[in-house]
Image (cartoon, rainbow over all chains, first blue to last red):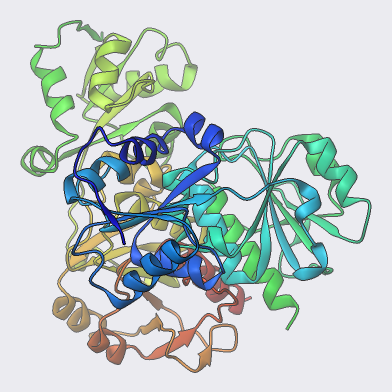
Length: 265
Length: 265
């Protein structure tokens, strides 16, 4: 049976609240996901929270009740609490009425099985957690196997990234690596590294994409460093019509990922 | 010559600060844009601020000095101020050292000349100001003429939208209209209304897009209402590979806009 918890000073409440902070996520090895839609996505991907917190209202939906029961059956902790406390946990005025703390998966490169998907997204120094989540969601929609984070990226397990991913965090494999590690791993097997560059001459719609394809996207402000571009097997250009700036990093990823997918039809 | 202003109580400082608030933007008819890149984009598009504020550091760049001089030459107000005050105006801890208050353009539909571009983006109840800005930026990159905002959208002149647009706010025409007004205007002349729907059977890559094409995108949560879909001349589907949710509204716009552009090559 779920415990009833109504005190802000309760240690589980404190733990869940702390997960909005990166250091606490690291030391606890947990991260927070909110809302019935995302928690259902997690369960459909075979993952249950270690702790689930909910309001009486949040437990009313049959899917929520299932997740709460399954969490307890798997030895997890279930706490029924107030909207006020859920609000403090999520940092939102109108919190979701159901949230879960999940175990962070290992993110070493050797956990990536490149034969499992034709497309993988590789992001370099992507700083905005919302962009990380959006890229995960785009990768999921485009049939990518996962996201490899290079250099100093935002934390994919932050509340903002999980929220923007709309559950894709649970369907996409995630790895973090230094650039040299990644290149060494990449070259140990088949794989085409594709970058986009305004300097490229090859049009993105005319290029030939191999499988597995590793789509490399650069930092929001600077784009890809020159030596990263030089490592690419293929550099393509998305022709821009506009007078203002180019596409943002997440948009360019979406346009490229769907163009690559379309080229394989 | 620019005025030196160092008091938070100064009326111009107060006016600029107030522009982060929608009501003040409405009543003053002004909006705020920040940073050399965006202010230069505005000038290149023929627009100067009515008020420009900057730190001594911000005025040092030759392009910034040009914009400040041009603003004064056009009868505008230029104030040199402190980083602290710029921070209060922009609401950011690390503010841009140059910002401008611009006159809001009229946003009635009759200001849209559909013959000027092959593609127009129509957003229904897009609630996130960052999405509005991102869609503007995407439209600019894809060669759209502008953005038509239907029903209750976020304010395209909010600081967040202007920031995310990266200057595209100044290159894209903007209109706001009720759905019935828009349909009546649309049907008064040539134009294909295209919607995306998970229920559509027509593949987005196999469809025939006419010019001018009006790409209709729905609200972030609900998508398009059924009667809006029914009004479309063409409903297409972007096939999704993923187990999680579909593309987000801004991503779907980017994928669609570039697919439409590509179909015309």
